[in-house]
Length: 201
Image (cartoon, rainbow, N blue to C red; front, side, top):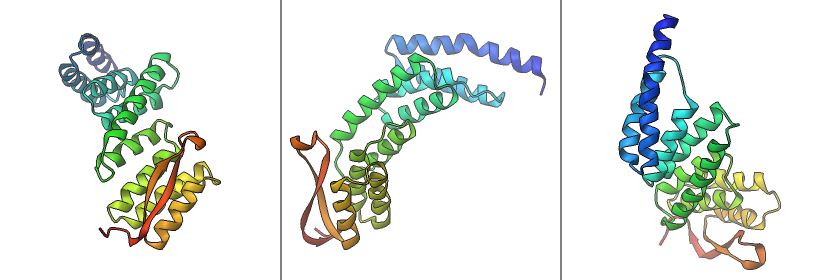
């Protein structure tokens, strides 16, 4: 590859990336997303994966209310360059918005899995998140996936009684739910729903 040509092509992207950033600042994320995506794809043609562009794309998708893609791009920005304070500050905002979105979803909504995986990508996943994903899979009749999620919760906290109970309920084919108790500082704990098997009404 011609290094001079590569340098020129990447330099040509600078004003367009600046335009995308300006559009984000003006709360025009849909326009910003299009400009920045073009820059992202063109930079990759020249073997350049830009943490800065990924950061701005994360902001665009967060403003658009798409936490799954926002988490993916902020995760990529931090993978490429974990040190800039603006990246880490944006990650905190994106994670908070993703958690709010997660709380609004029905337990069977396909978006649950995407958000929890995104939280894991940026190192923000919690025991509660893994248990929520386990419950999500259980309600959809995905036994093996539910066990994997319960095991992930136990990997974070082997003493977590909620995760222990959830795993036992999944293994036994019981339906179960998540409750929250003030005495446990909001940590989710599991409750059996009778003797119904997973997936039954």
